[in-house]
Length: 232
Image (cartoon, rainbow, N blue to C red; front, side, top):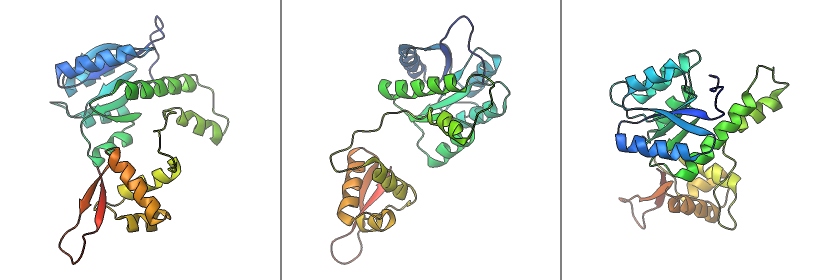
């Protein structure tokens, strides 16, 4: 990773977004986070890549819907460029293939816009902790130290869950939905996750309330149509 500016402890961020107003808004959000400062704005992919590889940038806040060179191409190029900054994707693109590609090209996080300051700060703080933990050239002692290092990239906060719901079970239901493009009924979710039908339905309804799933009745058969839940 590139070294920080010796004159400042702040991590330097390049904001790349096609819309000037949104880029300025993202700059204001970044500059509100202690330990970070925006050092440039780029309105297209070619400008973003040129500014990033010129030096003096630690992190690129990258939109994927850039004109000219697409954001994923920028991400790929930086992934293969020696000494290039890290990338934190901040985009309205919600394509699962785009998420996989961004992760494959080394993005440290993938945030869906419009950005909320609390979420951005949480992820930037996690990134700063990772940078601090990864500093130096000392060889890691064991797998546990590697795991602890990588874990610093994950923000510590978890969403508040209603009484009776647990984070691990919620993760299982999320994973089941992600693996089912056509969605799941509560019965199917129960089979996949090992939860009871009633419990599975509670988690599915919680995801609907959070905007992470939607209800999709299936018509065409006799009787009451089964309610399916589809990930968004």
